[in-house]
Image 1 (cartoon, rainbow, N blue to C red):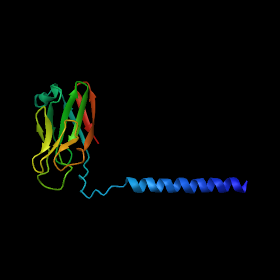
Image 2 (cartoon, helix red, strand yellow):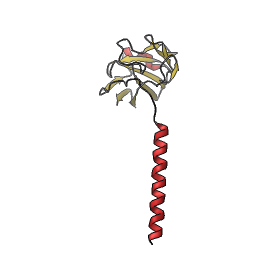
Image 3 (spheres, rainbow, N blue to C red):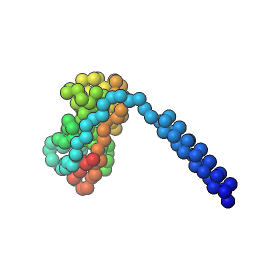
Image 4 (cartoon, rainbow, N blue to C red):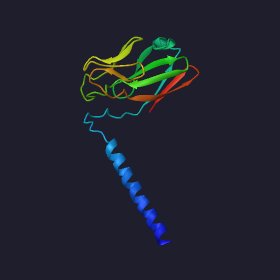
Length: 146
């Protein structure tokens, strides 16, 4: 019985060491500051005239909320994405605000980073995707939360 528990203890020690090695290998040396956190709970009515770009796939609009505003992008009639406008590259810079290039891309004119309409970095110094918020569609009402 003692040998059984010794083997289990050795196995746990090896497993614990493997976990330690894995977590040490997965750490990153990313020294860029993070985008500050902000509570988000915004409601959009898709039938409102100011949201008319959201009637077309890849259409996008600006709304209030988040740290520096939010961009909402329509993927298709039942799927919408919402992103923080604060660029993830040097987010504390006062000009780090993402803009819409209609139906093409999202970009930050301050650092020249470009992002896909799915929020992924495409070019420029930004390597992180845009911060994404949850978007829930119910009828013609879109709720954006974090």
